[in-house]
Picture (spheres, helix red, strand yellow):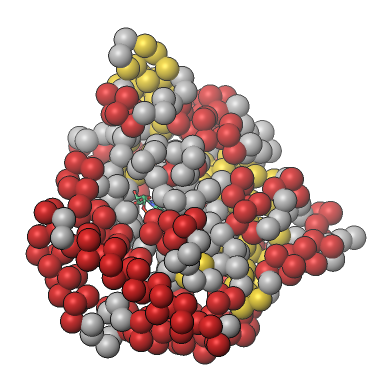
Length: 457
Ligand code: GDP
Ligand code: IMO
Ligand code: MG
């Protein structure tokens, strides 16, 4: 029997604003799969896996590469900071995990280069305090913008075209310098941070990652070519052959549905398609081939960076969730904003992604509360809404309608089955499942690889 007949091609993706616990779930499911594929985002992602006392945080590598049999694939839709990727590969090698022989990078994937990170920082700075997106400063938006613009992009296949690469990079860097000079001359760019970026830029330092000369960018690209050459291939053909051979594929979404460029809380979103709908463009596999769609959410809501968050708790309750859940960013270390579970936003995310299952993580974190809240509707401008409005300004004005349920006040970290959970915890899960209209088949009871309760509702 072919493996894919037993284990359907599956996608694990976020239903919230990222950091839902996708890494942990991918790690748990991975032994049943042959390939683990990233199809969107870049080093803005931070996926954590806890194995005993060891903690791994992966940014560009698919989490599944921690399992020695899995082949990790970085698909065409990922924007790759090659220097950061090489750093991750080397850090894992130092811990005894050699991923290079098991890594494949699409020759169609785009490279994030030094100027993208500078553009990211300057554009945030120019937006001023009120307008900042609160990006991860990893150059994600500027790299996707170049991809869409087409004439200023560099892909992995360009890296292998040694004859034409230099001329291409020289032309792109000239355009980039002109664009950045215009940005530096904006009145808002006179802050200390912008000045220090400008100083690096005009000095033309030979430090590859900090300078914007064509030579410095080419040095970074040559490092990428020499270190990653053996991994670069047509991953689209590879995955189609794998499907034909009956292998099972696990797609690892980055970020979350509420950060999706089309469906999220625009403009406070990332620049890619973050759910299973991103698999077509981001991996070259028809989304219809992927039949199990596991949407991951926490049992409460969190968000990092700017943007509306209707059920946010800016009080001691929010602080308590942050403390108990260790809610600090995996990529940037920023404190995460915390609030009650937003069922309006999560149902919307589950519907548009077609989630077949919900994984409800961090149920243990709510363990000490006397009562737990669920946001079931938004009140805004005299209306009661059960789907999120398009306008961020309208969302900012919205007030949450909160339904309170009794808490369970117990440590549930050692529970192995649904029946072992306290009655109020089970009721909470069932209420969320009925609000979402999707079965909650996996429940997170702690950060450890093994702390998940599986259920068949
Ligand atoms: P990702 O980006 O979706 O992979 O999530 P992150 O790794 O950025 O953040 C999730 C955090 O929650 C990590 O620190 C995980 O170790 C932790 N975590 C995941 N599931 C659970 C859970 O069920 N309970 C607790 N207490 N921690 C969890
Ligand atoms: P994982 O995969 C949490 C957020 C940023 C910012 C917005 C835009 O770990 O869940 P970007 O750098 O992408 O232009 O930032 O999106 N963001 C994330 N928040 N987890 C992530 O990834 C995120 N990726 C992007 O904080 O608000
Ligand atoms: Mg994360």
